[in-house]
Length: 437
Image (tube, rainbow, N blue to C red):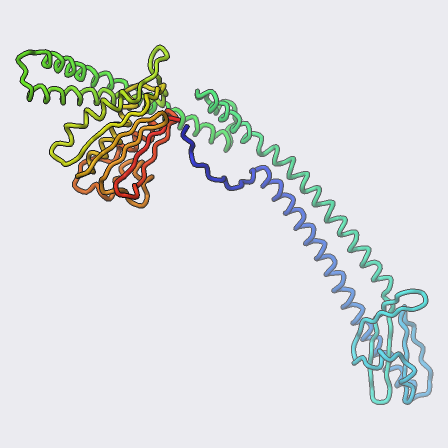
């Protein structure tokens, strides 16, 4: 049984999955961006407002302290959550060591105290001989920020799930007509009969696609019907003159007045007519993609067909120093018309006769296959390419042909489940094998 070479299919995502993933990613990205912007703006505004306020308060505090030193009149300050300290000469050591190292400006400081971790803003101004410090406790603000981050994280997760749910719902609505179209196309493929698709869909993009598929299917159906009618007509019209030729050659061969040389020529005409009839039958099967066996359950004798084909090619050798021999070790029976087997063997043996200039051509028939070996010029690197249409080998220069014979052989083998191979022989020449199992 012929086996087609299988290549691994690349993983393809379903269109519905793409829609769902797109919705989920869009919802998550949009919500996360909003949350990040909210956290950034809150931090930016807090840092800016608190820092500016502390710097202004520290400026006013220092100016008031200097006025108090000049006038001797005490001045009172009302700070909200702000603790002010003034440090004169020889008292710097009484302040925290970290404060002493800080330059002028506003700094963020975290300390661990008995009541817990405390975070505050520290404004520093160091004048000649006098240092000023203002602190602003932001512990509650830090807790509020942490709570905001948590809430925003929960919000992002919620809206991501919501976007996923919307994606699932919308994809089912969007993909429903596409899935219905695919289901109907699959049903048409199974039944092998086209039914109109456009009446089942609305006048939208999917409906337009269904209408286009109906038009295309109609064109293909008409084309196939024309091809079938043409093939049937050609087959019928060609068989009639071929039958006349065969009948006439039989009558001529039965004439006692026919000379031996003339009889040989008439036999060549008879064989050519028979080959043409077989080729027409095989091509008609290919055009219909029909696998047909002998009538009444009979099977064809491969060895018998091979002997007839070898005998038909003997005259083609002519004066070339070639020996064409048939070796039969078994008589395999195949459920296929003799015409099909003859067309395949005609091409394989005919190629060997055409390209071999001297030596021998050996046709071996066993229980599993028919093997054709020759001592011709051999094959190129890619022997499988010779089974493509209009592809000829490097050694075909100077010979006639359209490069269709082996392509017909491959199609017939695929139709009947056979396997044909073509390879170069190590000792020179080519080896073609037709396997029936």
